[in-house]
Image (cartoon, rainbow, N blue to C red):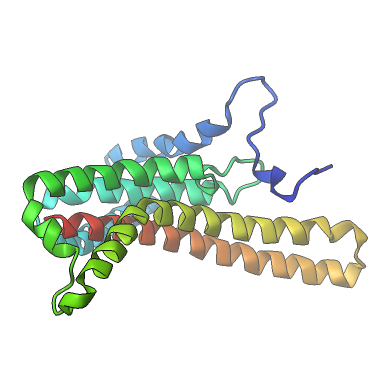
Length: 222
């Protein structure tokens, strides 16, 4: 019996070992399929997706083509883990701040160090938007500084909150099943299927948003 609604997201393992986080690396299993002599349809589809992401990120970064690799890898990692969480009895690592903040914070710190060391004048100029009245400049500096500092937190919380919200709703509806009539159970199953489709869309959208925002943050320091 659950003592807390959020206890469904608690790490738990029956082998007395923290094996939950191993689900984060299950995507490695799919890598060998990309080296087949004749690629499968899944491999071809995935390559098309990566090519599309590469073209889009390249226009955002406006730097060398290799710069998009880290953001494509980030998108792939988050999307795989989001989808893994939709399968029964698989730990959803992206619903934990410890996972999402680990992805967002090092990226943001790296961008800030690079920007302030190599483009110091540009970073100072970015604190005051163009056309700001002189009387508002001190306030704009404070606002821009705060909005810049909270960026890794918003990235992490956005991803974790969106993954938790859908899982919680599906858990709440699923727990009502035993106490419902046959007709209501059928309606509940249809509702759960629709929610699962919605969660699949959220899994793709949130990984895309995380990668695109990271790309935009990197383009600001160049």
